[in-house]
Image 1 (cartoon, one colour):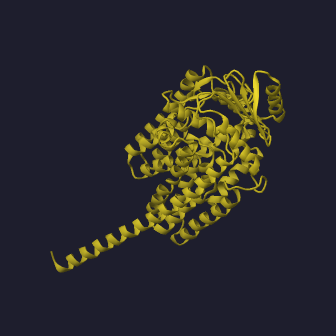
Image 2 (image 1 turned 30 degrees about the vertical axis):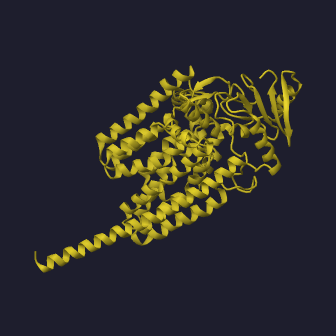
Image 3 (image 1 turned 180 degrees about the vertical axis):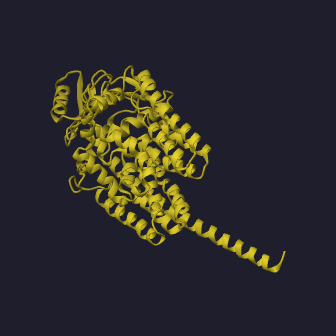
Length: 496
């Protein structure tokens, strides 16, 4: 080899080594940011749990399903409105929860699920960084976009909210996009299977991702196979799995009474009265929802409309719903929208001139960060933010609830108010007011007005029902009041 060629080779090797060191340095920096983000958010969630600001709906529901799995009864829960023992698949098809059971064996606390969710969501920063570096060729731009993902206010609110299997799909979908971008279909398939295991409708997002892959990347056969697999999952889950475990159709069809009340009804309404569909899509709260999603990302995802459009199935599911929380950006139904808006923002920034990429990525980070400070999951007084929140109970009330919960023996069937229920769900029978069923103990928080009723899968605000329930137990000779402090009551069945 000539001396010139040898020198060129050494220069190339040194350049490659420098590039690898730089890449590792940026990756370590992103990892440090992920760790810090996880620690801060977990501290927020822990405080919310300790202060009884998280309820049985939905943290306790997930805790009971995971705990039951460790007891040899996979995904068994107490139905929130009927008090019957059911397998969770009759409500939501999210067998992903089974994968969390080993964590409970290691640390038997609801906080282990909270930590898992926060830590797992933080991992989404890595595929965002990799996508940014691949499409922009700049580590700096990629790092700003990865930090923008962590700063995006709805990433934080999703991670810190009550545990939901679909929230785990946020990083999984980002990894899925990365694997499609790098043409690695086997790891993509693993991610897609995990994504679909988090919910019955997640197959729609996988199907839409397959359509994008077919047309945007020219992989027609692979894209079609992905689309079919996703559609089949949702069809089977909705029309076979849910009825098999519930004995009827999905209880959540009631969220769509305005537009037909079922998938078939929605299609009929679209043909017979399309104005109803259009009206449902363009209500003021739906438009506000779109603004809340778009502003933190500076609308840059619109520069990559193909990938952004993959979010449409879930966006339509949310905006067509009669249940207003579906268009609250803090609600967990946002989980299969966030990844596509974030990834489309990365591609959108890559389509700008090179000189504009750093300012654009920095704008996403700054705007998202500022909004996260205003509307994020941080403790604050109710009404201080445009979206409101749940007030922190007084120290005396928190102490009363903690003492009340500690009186209930492990494993004893119990009826509890929503906040207390989150602390008492690792047992076979856990009911919500006003159900008694097998309950041997009852914990009533008169400050919590939420109750259940047979015709709704949701909690309903009825403080008069809570007061009447407590009075009935107080007068019933079959129950004895064993605790009362700061409007927190504990009753025990006399023959228990």
